[in-house]
Image 1 (cartoon, rainbow over the protein chains, first blue to last red):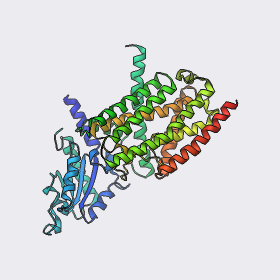
Image 2 (cartoon, helix red, strand yellow):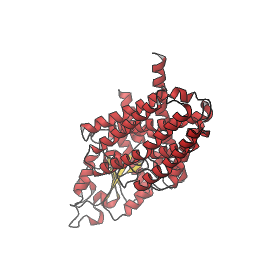
Image 3 (cartoon, one colour):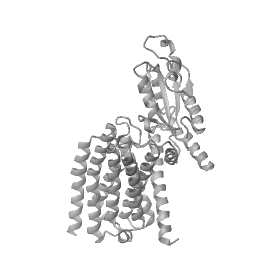
Image 4 (tube, rainbow over the protein chains, first blue to last red):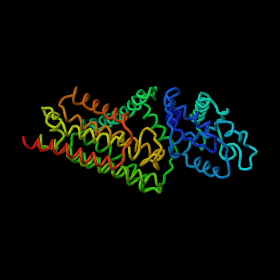
Length: 149
Length: 283
């Protein structure tokens, strides 16, 4: 039984399906995230697939500040992902609200709404940094991820 | 264990191997054509094992039932093919599997799932008549629907049924959901319809439909082995060549709309099939 569980955990790290949600970013981070899919970086090497469906996703990649309008969407997307799951926050705004953190319509970083596992700083972060963050997230996924097994 | 049971189990394992290898090679080939490296060859297996280990978020009991039935019938259709049963029986069993995938998608409330289901129905409407006509051509030529007769047929059917061969390749493209026929769902993670007919299948249920799809692809490729006797050309070269052609077309074309698909499938496909059937009937 333990061997089977270890086997499934290994497969989890080899097949992370990724949901990308732009919470309210300036699109700088989103362009860098999409750059990871291009031939230069090719994250499909690691079995990463960029999906549009939270029901199929293992990894939530979010960028931008949270505001009162989209915090429900963010929480809903997170709730729809089946466990185990990992959240990676990308960019200064996603981490803390960035330069917009004191604005009247900004709630703050992603971790004000849902638990975040990996923080990737930068404005915007380089694709290499985003891939490093995702790989760090994969290690957490292989160790069980969030929401139990 | 009897020889028949061993044959069946070996056949099931072989079908899974063929289906998953076809999917893995497809992803690598597609990546190379886009000057990427692509995932490992066994990536579809990793995906399915991971999905089986995920939390089961089941929309409703009907959908779970439909996913299980899809897998059972797809596996049964392949098993009947391997054990050399009746071609018409194989056809109707695989049609049941395809229908249950659609019923499961319609059982949920998601509009994406519904659009995907409607498009999957249109795809079935496009390829099922083509499949039947190909099987009728085989019957007219050999005088039997029994697969043991067809497998043992000494002369290449390809020379007598070249148009029906093309029609079957057409049906393969629609059944594999490859461009320009990737209307209901797409393996390359396009996002217009979220995930089409597969939107609300998640975790272990999605794994069941993926395994069922592996059997379906193996079965469709298996139909091509009937066109040539023997192992070398018939059982290997012919299916591989047709598969490579479908993947090439997938990479060279964009998604079409359903009107175009039905128009070409029924206009061109049925036209070619009937010309070939008349030719066989003439003599």
